[in-house]
Image 1 (cartoon, one colour):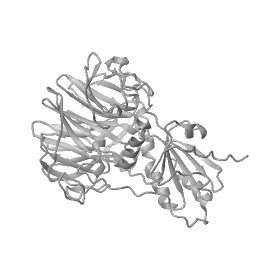
Image 2 (tube, helix red, strand yellow):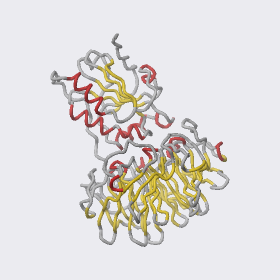
Image 3 (cartoon, one colour):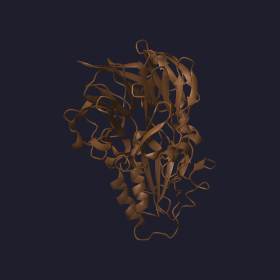
Image 4 (cartoon, one colour):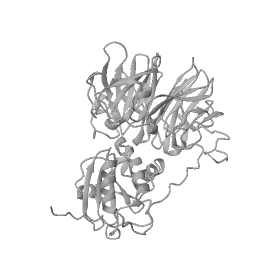
Length: 481
């Protein structure tokens, strides 16, 4: 079989995480692994641990992330820089916003890996996640025992020094005057009053999985939360650990209640005992009676954890990444990332189809689309009604005052949706990838993710103000926030 020479990178494309643009000519003599990714894609995030594993095993390997954007917002260099910091990426990243490199390598899916041998020829191409063993075997064969003495081409991630880092979700409880913050970039949960007086910091601030007391417990990029005020339990979607955790405020302990710590590869509807069933990137939670509903972003489904029995199962969604309305058994979602309830319906921020969905709670539940195109590439920024609405990778959602409030994440806006008519209207902009919302009274709390802030919107005056957290520090530091 004839060998295919790897196409050279186009000149003048931006590069991140490296001090100069790289070329395959410069890298001749080294094995190169290209990772074609886009940072909205949950599958692309799933392979980051595989890349880290390969980098550590093979210091001679050069990993290059080729960021070929799906959404318009992801073409922005600064947005990609923020994603690199959020996900602790140390290897060089080529900003392929025009998808020139994507086309030159005939890539058709995110993620796709291309392995290039020491002489600059393509040694293998692999699409999809779960390819660690195949890549390991091929790269090990190519590198063999003849590793070079050249230094690795990597840039160590810089610590995020702000008091809160890339907050993913926020939960406000007016009755207890508490604000629960998923301090995702610091791998911890912060609890304050609604005005910012810090009450608890839960987690060491170091990524890991460890149950125990508030000071020694560990999380990995936690996201959505649900609060049971009667039992004083806070449930947490521990996203990168693929776990559901329970925080007991009476005992001041953190406990795992579902998941095995391994990512599930099974996207077909299934279930079992919670602690024996692998999960797939749980992203948000909603408490309904004695059940916890879970936005399982990695398998494009909604799951249910029955708290009384500890059993967990697929509640809605076939696992196909599409928009299909109708009965929950045949419905399909696309990376659901936010949940909210009004007592009768579960509202869903279905991020990859940039749409708001709803599931009728009760007997014979049905799924409907409230607004948005329902198409994987049907995104934009347009107010209106129903399917004429265009959003861009919406991730946050809340219900209150008779309306659904959404964080239109990649449009950096907060919008109001009538849950019955699907009429959508922008109310405030000026955020940076807001990913979480919660409402208490007439105040909407916003996890303003890339600004490393929690903002509040007075829904009567539409004024926006940042919450200060006096005395709160980044892990291992202490300075005024």
